[in-house]
Length: 157
Image 1 (cartoon, rainbow, N blue to C red):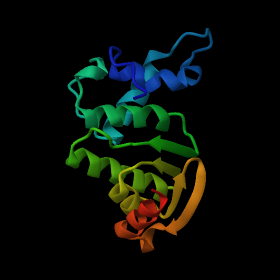
Image 2: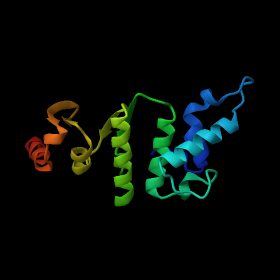
Image 3: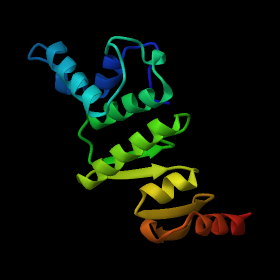
């Protein structure tokens, strides 16, 4: 989700920061745009032969990395991710989780919305269990076990 699949990796990455890439005449400074894209391809280990290929030609894990690159390029202070590893292989999932933890350690607030309980338990230091738009339980991530969340969810049925 969140990608223009027929567009290039480059365009998908810089589309959210076009205002910062404009020169004095209002045109996109493609040298600056390409430098930004190259930086994120390297930083997020996006496996691609070229930044100009369509995002649709990438694996699910690399597509997720392009989405991350787009939003990280904005220099946001908070990153809200809904199912950040849905549809990606185990290796890519682990790499994405490691990157998110690194970003959080660097001061970025990362909010993960997911129904993948292991993903939540292993990557969040605060877990909020929601049901029908209401907060049901607040748990400390480091002290929480998967079976504890499962027990809470079973009570809601």
